[in-house]
Length: 257
Image (tube, rainbow, N blue to C red; front, side, top):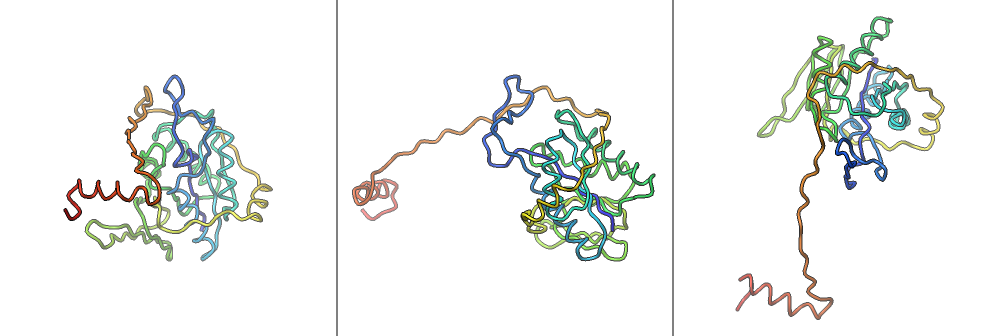
């Protein structure tokens, strides 16, 4: 089983987002970076499949040189190889991103090294496009299932389950090769161990310079949502605040008169 798992370098979730002065990008000077959460689960799922049935995992990302950090994180938990589709750091639209991934897959297939399974996160944490896995599947003319919360590989078939509205599961059986987009919660990703990181640092990363073929919407600017303002009243501390708390409760009509 040869698995390609695609990941994206994104700002660490929970950090305060600040835009550059021209509103064309996120100011990353004070931000940490990580792999998008759905894609962390995709890497974990790929490693589990290979651990159970044999094969190898190749991690791929499109981004600047510093995105090799996220590829080494993937190798530290079990990915065997990594490919960096190296760019100048500008955000690529979903159409251009999918085309670059498809080009890599087709080149491997032509060289006699096809992938049996392509794993993606359901969507990136920063842009939330939901498009790349579907575009890749259409271009390669292979089956695609998105929103997957359980996955099993059995005799050349992927059995993918996703949650249905109202409870229960939708179950899809698709022949391999196929594209599967998983959601956070399909598994609990392991943390890279120190020995794993040491092994990952010794592995080489294949670098490819893709040609951008944009064709989707063009971004004009970024805009942060308006922050909500909240007021806090300090009632006091210790026993001194008890009387004030009682007054407020009675004022709300919640206490006895």
